[in-house]
Figure 1: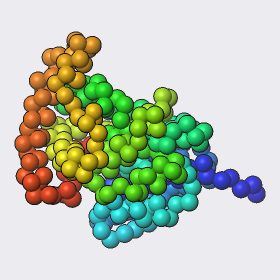
Figure 2 (figure 1 turned 135 degrees about the vertical axis):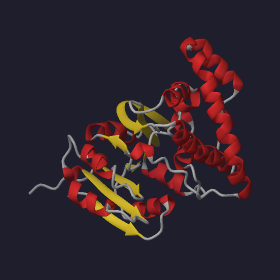
Figure 3 (figure 1 turned 60 degrees about the vertical axis):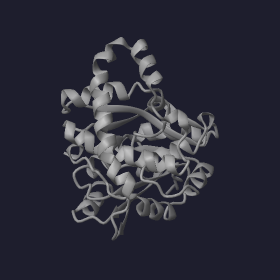
Figure 4 (figure 1 turned 30 degrees about the vertical axis):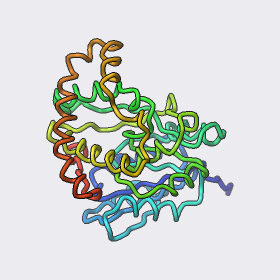
Amino acid sequence: MSFVSPFASVVIPAHNESATIGRNLFQLYQGIWDEEIDVVVVCNGCTDDTAQRVRETALGARVLEIPRPSKAEAMRAGNASSAHFPRVHLDADVVLSGPDLRRLVAPLQAGAVLAAAPERVLVTAHSSLAVRCYYDVWQHLPQVEAGLFGRGVVALSEEGQHRVDALPPLMSDDLAASEAFDRSERRVVEGAVVYVQAPRHLADLVRRRIRVVTGNAQADAGGVRHPESSTSWSDLARMAWRHPHLAAKLPVFLAVTAVSRVLARRRVRAGDFTTWQRDESSRR
């Protein structure tokens, strides 16, 4: 029997992801052999049958179970149990196929960059009009187009992983991973696609944005976030000039942004960077 060395390790933190983990793993193993990737799902503080779903869906995936619901601890445990690079950090509620995974890690294998993420496709078929308007604007922001965050997957070379490991623990781990690299060191890989489910309702979107605003404030306080990663009025003006059809949607974007910032203030003042405003609507 020939031995196939994995071309990547994939770490998937999962907290009560029974509704999504089967879809995630089924697509991940499409188009590749089980032995070509080393997958570990770290079930952290699960009270549902996430671990059993993993075992039923993907015989090639390893399961680790830790008692505390903590994404940071899950990532540390998953990394400690993985030996291969590139190292791919994949959220349990997004969809990335095997061929897209292979395309994603190719620049890392070639030594072209230290960090990479796929192109993002936001699934908004079940989202309200307000949610769709918000994301139509958000996706055209220059920092959103160029950054590795908000995609649910980041791939790192060995050097890139060491750099991210040296960062302080942050709520917005994908933002931190993106900001750890200059633009010349990171890449959004054309042709590699991840599908991200958007919130269904405006309230769900606001909960998600409160988490983002809180995480951004923590990253700003820690000096992790680059100034150009913040959205300015000039960014919005240039975007509206280049994409006139978005002008009518800007009020929705601005309203959601304002409300989220107001509601996040209490958490920021209290230093609460652990409460996770989870969007359950995208997990149906």
